Amino acid sequence: MENMDKILGLSRTSASIREVLRNLILVAAVFILCLLIGISGSIESLHMRLLEGTILLTSLLIAFQIHFKKPQAFMSYALLIWAISPEMRRILDWSFHSYTETSIISLIPYTVSLIMLIPVIQNIKRMDSRIGLMLKIVGAALLYGFGIGFLKYGLSSVFDLLNYVVPFLVVAYVHVSNFGRKVHDRWLRSFSIVAVVIAVYGIYQYMLLPPWDHFWMISSEMNSIGPAEPQRFRVFSLLNSPGPTGLFLGLALAIMTVHKKCRAFGYFGILTVAFALLLTLVRVGWIACVLMILAYFFQSQLKSKIQLLFIGIVLVLAYQFIFPVLPGSSQVISRIDTFSALEEDHSFKERLTFASHIFSSILSNPLGMGLGSSGLGAKLTQSEDVMVVFDNGYLNLFYTFGLVFGLAIFTIFVYILISLYKLSKSEKMYASLSFAAICAILFLLLASNVLRGLSGFILLLIISLAYAPNSLIREEV
Image (spheres, rainbow, N blue to C red):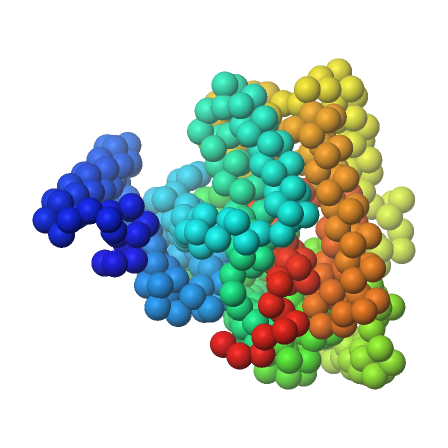
């Protein structure tokens, strides 16, 4: 309770007043929670919304417990919550035979991640001036985008704001947290472990298709991922869709390949993640993986280069001799063949047409459309002036924040690229890995806005490790 008193600002008041204020706050919190659940229940199933609210509250209580008792494990817990919450929602929907476009479960990763605000606010004065300036610029862009978007899209802009705030909050959290290199290695290893779990479940899902996943495929009408039949669809595993799953696995595979200390389950883990990544049929996942490995390769020492070449040979041999005999290999191989024939690929042509159309829209409205105008949050608004799918991350920044703030955010990432390139010349622990991550961001933005949500959370976590003050000097914790 002492920690809670500090958070609520009650530590300097008398014991009797603190007790009264704590009770009032508790009653108010319970009342607000019941009110939210009651409102949700009046719209749909009360029992379902009540259970969703209970899961949300339980996840938050566990997060607070970890933050105060074992803070070095908080990031691992947050990564796990991001990975499993979509599947939790699908199982709950299936249990109640009720599919909804929105769910309280979808808020769990964001609410858990916002707990990082506590140490950030407490240690804001310790932040490096360069990191602080970059975050202030991003914060100004978010406030501007939210100010425009909230008037047009309401709740959609709030959800979109969370999608941006949480990944950039990771940068501040890692920078002000007093953790050393061993803790950071544990975070990366936990990321690899979660990736292996996602890969194993994805393979199981592909072979048998559990009833809750089948129910979601039918109810959500996601026809683009294939028919709801075993071995005939694109794997999405525990996450929302094949896209996020492929990117998650691609980034994890890159880290497992280049960072031996963070490699979960050895070569078995690498091959399992690689196989599941193939089943997603997500090319951008492989592009991210290969790009990060190449960027790391050119910055690494000779010993690391030899190890990377050996792992590359193992993956190529597995693809040539083992993968062709596995179920669904023909569909995957035909998808990979499109890498050499992009001019004949339908989705590639659609992206070019989309980019041309959006570029014209940006020029006609240089002030930007604001937060909530694109992305998953756009589903929450009834406005027709929104785009749920936005196939170009660079244009999405200018479309959302306008030319001035869009250019400011782009400049920040170019600065980070140059900074990490210089740092990787002298520091070989995290700088090379962070440099590989910023290269991936700048390339992946050509296809989608990877700065939001889970992808932004992971990529900015990797980048922030190079800027953590104690990553080089502390071995304990």
